[in-house]
Image 1 (tube, rainbow, N blue to C red):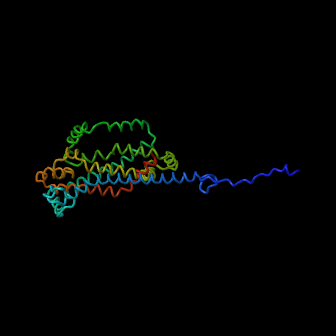
Image 2 (image 1 turned 90 degrees about the horizontal axis):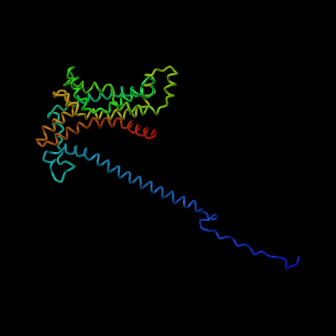
Image 3 (image 1 turned 135 degrees about the vertical axis):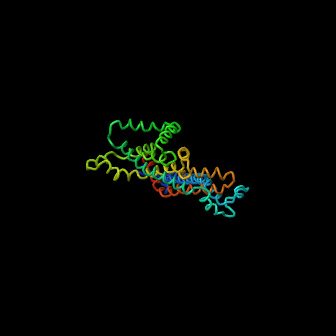
Length: 317
């Protein structure tokens, strides 16, 4: 072959790497992924900050009336009307909490309210749980029809039943006693039955059927399987019902007349009628704050169950 026929190929120059291209140490996709990840983290952090601020403002709005009640209960009668308002009393008048026990039958009112609220909520919650278990898991004829009839009772306003109930209780001699406040609630609460039934529907029927095959009765199934499972929901409903019974004012003012049978809410109302004219608002606020303490104690005791109920409701919803 002659020298003229030899074709020499020029050497190839190494390709220049494009930043972010295949030869780059940091690919473009990874760079974009890093930026999007940082952006998502910053957005999440900003959302958490805004949520915390909103919840903090809401907490202040909710706590402010309680703090003002306690602050007013430690003031003098003239200190209530000072401008600008003082959140920290000067001086602290602790004698207001000593005077409330002699200014009216406060201790008797607390005792009567505890009897009514505790008896109704404890026995009534158990009855409601049993009824909810029957409607949710037991096989019985016309179960849905009976449940629908039970719910229809919610559509009847209390003023419609108020006069017939008073007539019945007066005819059997229960007026001016605690029985009209206690006995109707011992048979359960429609709202609690509905809530617990919906909660029990999330529990598989196979658990109850397996226990029945093993020879357990429905009552044994309720105590050993169902009651521990619904304990958070039952505790949440228990607190709501306890608060409703503790703060009830309409039923006591209808049935109770003598000071020895009045509940705490009637005693506080009498305090307001008697001492508001004398502008003794510190005494009224002290009695109101004492009336609030049992509800706070119940909430503190059952707060873990309330949180569990909310968490379970969210996970099952």
